[in-house]
Length: 198
Image (cartoon, rainbow, N blue to C red; front, side, top):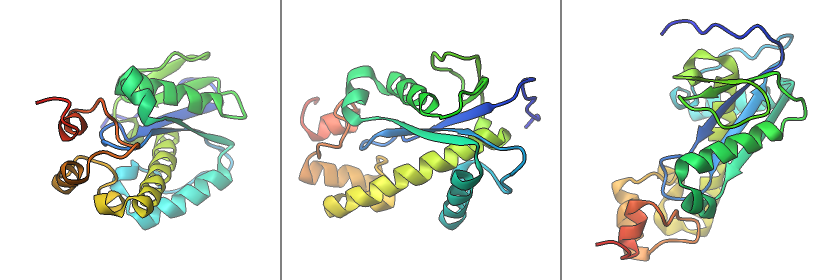
């Protein structure tokens, strides 16, 4: 992977999302401005890290970052807007929540939301840009915790294991028990489980 060239500016925020693919829960985003004077070692794409490592980095990022913020779009917003537009909205909310306004924003992926400051989409940014790696870790730990909490309320679905993704087990339980109020009703497998499509 070619090395990422940073824009010539200070106060760069990285933004990433977690949860576009699951059938349940919010899409969670994070925005992070790292402090060059207090680097966080070992940042990487959250999906490549062990849960223990992610949790340790989560605490370190929250402690050392100049500013960090979480954004989200709830299942009803995903159903109303579609997952892409809901993700863009959640990213806007994460950037808006930063208590320091970034001069530039780097977004993981190939598309930027409309923001008040310049931004660039970086493909595979979560493994190339430290700020995006940090954002991916905050978003993933936050969403995984929410799925573990949801599992306490709805133990029959196995949310703590599959995190809401459409595994064979999740689909089987969806058909057996129907959808919760946290399921995304616009997603095909949920529609089928509810008998809304043949």
